[in-house]
Image (cartoon, rainbow, N blue to C red; front, side, top):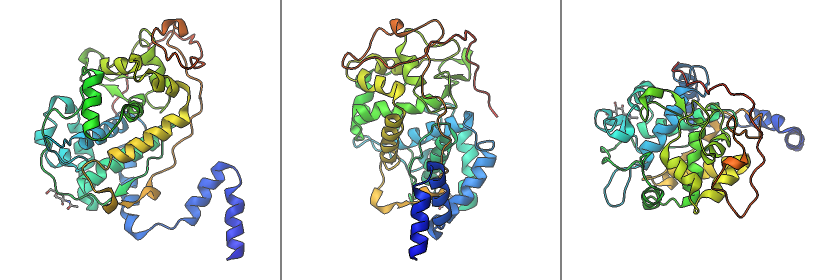
Length: 335
Ligand SMILES: *[C@@H]1O[C@H](CO)[C@@H](O)[C@H](O)[C@H]1NC(C)=O
């Protein structure tokens, strides 16, 4: 026993990558969570095209937000209860859920095959999708949501054209403050749009849509986005609002804060409408994300700090590289 313990300690103080291996080697799969390893294998192969951070990962992250946020103490809805997968013919018709029917129908067969609830698979697929993105968070995953749900009311999901006041108001109904909203918007660093502008289908929301990084925060602060990138009006409002600009700017080059604050907010989001104490921790099944290779963000071609008109005045502007590549950012292809 003493030997084993010192062996583990020795491994733990070696390089961080060894620590991950040590964890994987010494943590036995708990029986309660073993089904999630099977779900993981299936969705990595069949939904995420072999652990990619592409279109299906982006849509899975979006799906988790749309399912969970659909709760209001005034209007109803069950939050992260899987209702969008239980009643896709109702909920995917809502304007803000446009385009989610594909991913709902990609994930659903694996919930049925493995006998896990719709609410659980949506949050699990989100955590796996995020782990597929370079620099992504390893969001803890809690299982045990009931499979029971009712259709959520419409108009609970913040819209791309909403004001900061509207979005903060909606989010505070569910218990999120403005810092948490800014952190949750990190999801837009691994995202693309199809429905907002159908003439630029697949256009990403930043120039690195398969990397969970600060490019999104930087590119929404500059006067115009890089060519080929789609800018959501509400993102621009958050990037320039005096109430949110300072944290926004912090996330441009503080990847640790971005990841940690996003993860915390995400765990909270995944439990909206649920009794968190009745869920159990199956984070062990979530893969370790690929590490971020490039921490230094890059301005859009032809722009620099001069092209950021609304800055946080309480901190110096983050160091970012100039971009010498004028080629447009390519759209995200469906696999
Ligand atoms: C969840 O509900 C669907 C639809 O009624 C059903 O087919 C499925 O078996 C249920 N899953 C679980 C885990 O109960």
